[in-house]
Length: 220
Image 1 (cartoon, helix red, strand yellow):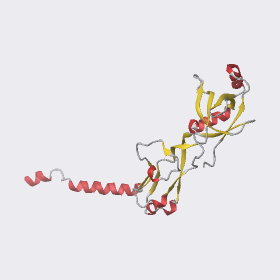
Image 2: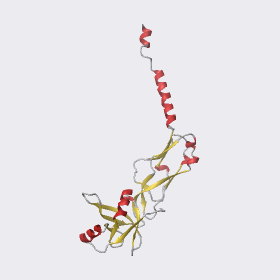
Image 3: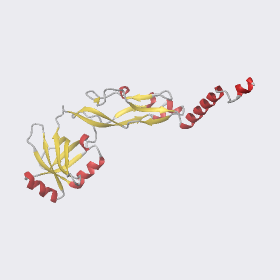
Image 4: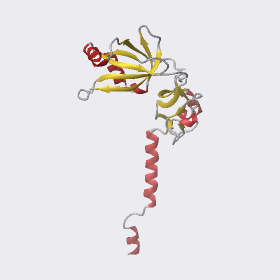
């Protein structure tokens, strides 16, 4: 289970319609609605500054939140739409959907890399390159993994890679990308070693190429 589902604080909005929404915006609040589940829609207001910070943090629409509204039980929600001012591009309304425990949603799950000190490939002088430090998965709302784990001690050789199929995913989860076995990380040779190898290849290639004019002189 995810250990840290962020809280999203809101206030219940007593009025509805355009007038109440305009009043909320004048009070530096962003009106919204919470819908779905077996409960009636709940009109809410979210503090403008708090919402702006969440939006700037990124992936607001793919983050699961624990919605806290005074007088109501906490509920897990995910954003389904953020309406914006067409001129200023600032949020004017938010739609949040309640989630049942069995609901399937897309979320970005962080990847943790462990046992770096016990990695044989790194001990041989390899360099770890992280391609993805998070992976978008289809997960069940009631059983969201806190993280995916890559055990670097299992990487034996320089040049080896870890792909998504090599990670044990929690039951009921799967990647959103299914048409390819995408890379999570690899261990490559240090750039200095690469340069030396490239120089050796260049020297070998040069040795195989005759010096210009040698054949002509021999013929003369």
